[in-house]
Image (cartoon, rainbow, N blue to C red; front, side, top):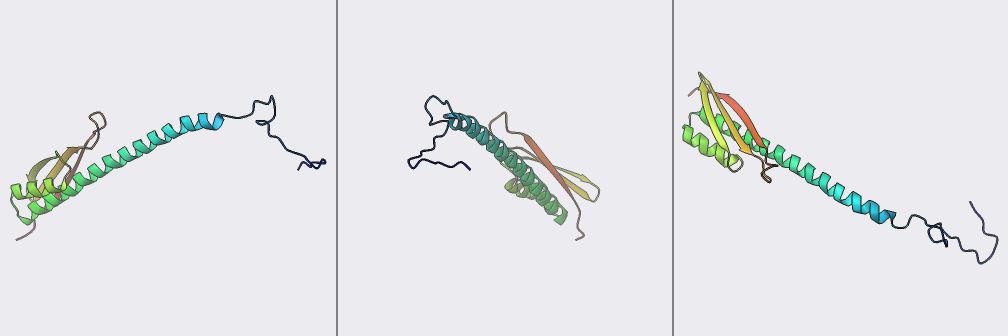
Length: 130
């Protein structure tokens, strides 16, 4: 540690010293680069979460539609149920293979045209005995 021998000693930093350039202005320049980069990373994370949520909504809708068909409800009732759960603009497809009902729900995630990704999920359920 440095000691000041004189009673009226004033320490000066390089930035405050006359003629010493120092680091003045670097924090502003770093913030001008870092803040937009952090905002871009946050936006990408939120977009990714939105795509994951749209995919999960499709999976929930497919499961609900498959269960409704397995219980013996009509195709239209199962479609209405699946569309109520699915994201806006979703398409629901049904197939039946013997005792197995399959439902596929496809939609686009939220976002601008270029960032709206297609997402889909399927589910199947065996016909319940009546």
